[in-house]
Image 1: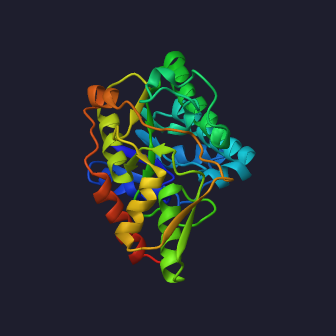
Image 2: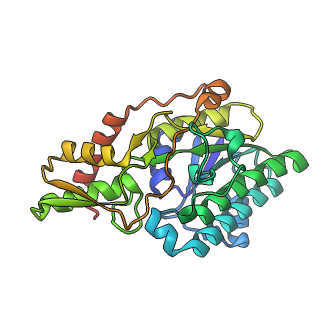
Length: 306
């Protein structure tokens, strides 16, 4: 089976590719095989050249709260146009299935915890990343519409916040874990006596080690399911305050932690109901949070790309 991964050179792509290579003939789009997925003619060229049986759409324009606030139009346009083009070519080609990677940002800002898939359209997403979240759930709805009208098979996976090796470590566009790891690293390097975190630290997040997402994707490829929303996560949450303290402990920072309450917290809580993934796919995350955090920090120290 030929499995084409879009965004293979990105954070998620680099984490899922090794596992999928063990099971399939994998075609990686990204890096050396660069195409602009916003251009329909280039997407058509991909499909005519590689003729994939399955497409894993992992490409996306992503970032943390700061990046989302600064680029709402770009995030929405890029994600919509890439996804629409890929889905349409799946329909026009002999592709058997598309695995669409959504986002927990698609959920309403005040979703009852744990988030159930049935709640995803029950309100407006958290404002700082709403354009990104709306784009992603629109694409998941498009997969369902194409299944209904054209018979295109698909799976809509909704991963929670992911972390792990190959992430982007900077203070402006990174997700929370790599941004905090870099913040602590800089404080240690500069002999700072304190670290300033964004917001109040009271918001909570659930985190999934990115490698585990690869197993969920493999199971979605192998399992004949309807393309409804399926949460992919651990079902456990941690407050940002506790997360930063844990990173400080692992990395050996002994200074003070202060919180800049003029900065946004983002969505108050994020924690998924993951029972559907276990029932339909047999998926359960295998890497514990402490272990995953230690692996991520070890990779960061060994790859000084910052």
